[in-house]
Length: 355
Image (cartoon, rainbow, N blue to C red):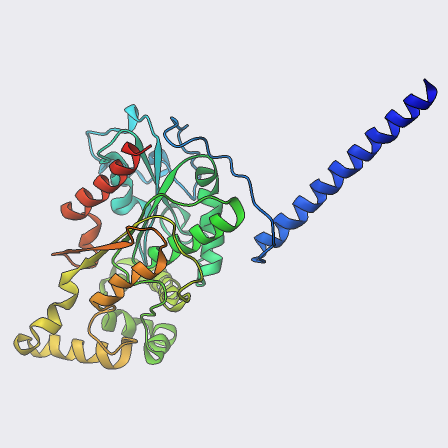
């Protein structure tokens, strides 16, 4: 019996040591994956429940703010009629805005205007923007991605989700999804990309980047947003200076591919100056010339050609690929355009119906 006890104790110790070894290996693998290394044979187990499960409401922070954290003026402008109180969410929509934006402008209202009570909407607030205005601005995609990932990783890890990006936010949404796949083994069920060409296309020429970095007031005029300095002052200038650096922080095709369908939205008013070039007044002709010769990477009066929106098809492996919706709006108007909202809500509802 003493021999049996001794053997039992021996094997218990072995089991404990083996378990400890596996724990150490898992920790090492997770650390290497977080650093961007491809670890052969390592598969992260996520915490997502089965699709269609009623989800808990998302945990909110300054990075992913709730209405009560917004300025009083912003709260007073939210829709009176709201579906927020009666939500029974089965799908989360995580939104990422673009340069110079903040949650209080447009995005907070979107959460109230959701067409299905089974969808909960949250928007990431950048450092240096909105309620995080006092924090340090970021000017690299990796740096902003890491901060954004901290905001949404719990929501991604514990429930089915979709992503929406606007402008630079499309790059950010893609980068966050790449990190989520790599570190959490989770992926979105739908991706909505408003007003940006695919992530491998830059925006600014070398002279445009130089103007952005060294002559910000000239850049704001040449880019068509002179109001930024008047409204935002020095902080507005700094915000755009940092934010627009991300437009050229691109990634090559194949760096990451979505496993879901993509809805890409193109604003047709981008091409107004080109379409009516013979009818422009002198001031607008000069603006067009400066933009083409000093700002645009592709030498055009717009950031992206139609085929660059179509190129989102190269960023998904899903059988439905990427669909481009062309709307009569400008770059900013797509955020509230009814055709965009209809297509967006329909795509999300269709996902829920398939649960």
